[in-house]
Structure formats: C-alpha cells, structure tokens
Image 1 (cartoon, rainbow, N blue to C red):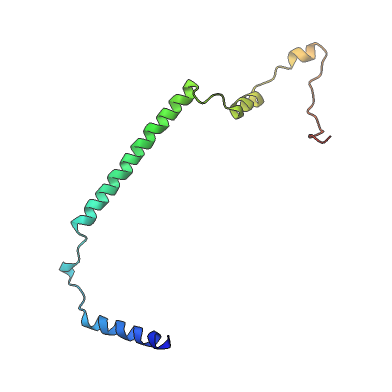
Image 2 (cartoon, rainbow, N blue to C red; image 1 turned 90 degrees about the vertical axis):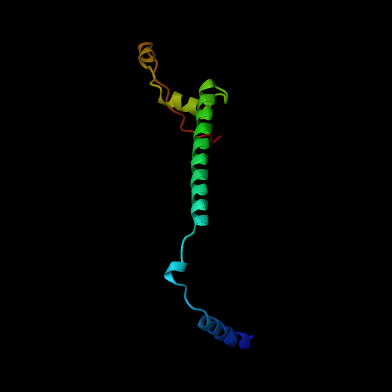
Length: 105
C-alpha cells in the first residue's frame, strides 16, 4: 500500500506534463448546455403553472364543501365569537368560570 501512495502522485505528475492546457478558443459552453438550460427553465415554468391550477382546484373544492367541515376552524370561530352576557346578567346569573380542575379526577 505504501508503494501505491508514493507512485500515484508521480504518475499523475507525468500525465500532467504530457498534456498542454487548452487554448482560449477551444473552451466554450456549447449549444448542448444551452438547450439543457432552456429545457430546465421550461420544466420549472410548467411545474409552476401546474401547481397554480391544482391550488385553484383545491380552493374551489374547499369552498364547495367537498372536504367537509374542519373541526379546527369551527372551534376557532367559537373561541373568537363575542359572547353576549347582557341577557345572563339581567336574569341575575353570573357568567360561568372555567373549571380549574384541568381534567384531574
């Protein structure tokens, strides 16, 4: 193994000596890379368009009630709805206080 560790860098140096660097005119991006770039750009645009259509369908289905009622939305509406306590106080009743038991029995 130690022989390979010594010979490998030497072989790489010999290989580098025999090769000349490319000329400036030889290095180009190429048409193939440009076509691939345009295809990827078109693919991302298509995926964005498709996502937009699907989200519109989901929104329309939600408004039509396809998914049913969301329990979280109902509980949120109940929590945020203002409570009319004037009729309770007029009858001489006091508003109920929340239980401090926290479910411990």
